[in-house]
Image (cartoon, rainbow, N blue to C red; front, side, top):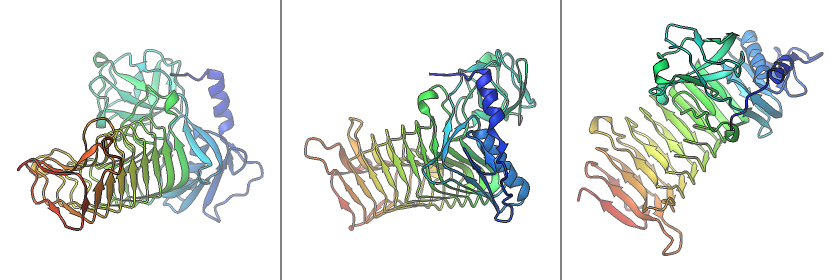
Length: 429
């Protein structure tokens, strides 16, 4: 269900969101700026208060080194919390909740919106407000990099001015529209950011019509980022991916949880070498637990629990080479445990190692499931020390295929120290 904020309510929230705490001492000596729902240098309970505080950190420490402290409470998000300089963003643990506000219904564009423009003309701007985050789409550009996420900075009649020009042309003839979707916490074109000790709630119940996939968004989203850390964070109920980091290098995600998101749990991709994901959980996500997209190389994925997602626990594919998967638990996923996707030899996920993982009880979607499936012209996959099994009683088992090697895969090494129960299938004979 889509719910629009009334004008009065929105103005009241905006007016009260960014009040500076009375008598609060500046915190530049400690390198921290605090924001809270009832105390702190900045007082407020929404994205406007958070952004004011983050911008103050950037003002005091323009080259980095500051900390944004977010106190306990629930903060309603009408746009991303944009991190624009190197800093630490630290909540108070699970009690710090950044929750997406209700989505408005789609708003159609009244004319084409071209990549040279900052101003878009919509059919009816009554549901829109300055400071809102939006995504621009059309019928041909709804997914991947075709969508663009922006912030409304001004409205005049039915003309909305955005913070940045789009990277695509959007055609009225293709039913172009804007919708209320954006990352809840976003760090773009940046390095040395740490995000710690908070919960993102995507409020999917009030955002059913505002899906945004992981190329342009996620509950926590990094783009063109280097040497960033996400730790002890939860993303739940987001209408898209939980955690997404695209075109990054050296990202560490640890002790995090992605739960109940509409699409992927953890999504590194679009050229993201040297990723580390460890001690994380992906639970009941709508597609996959851990999805290596394009060009995820030389990564380490260890001690994670990837369970109860609709399709695969782990998916590996396009140029995702030289990765290590160690001591993960991959279980009860709908279709299978670990899937190497169909790719030609020059694009396949070569030289990956699965070591010490427990891959069990997959295939809950009703079809014969598998533990590991290696498709495409994938080369030199190594399985060592894994346990691949179905622990359920006879007659209720669905992970019937332990390992399936496709007809074009080659150089697969299954060492004797694996404990394997179920069929070993070599499709190529």
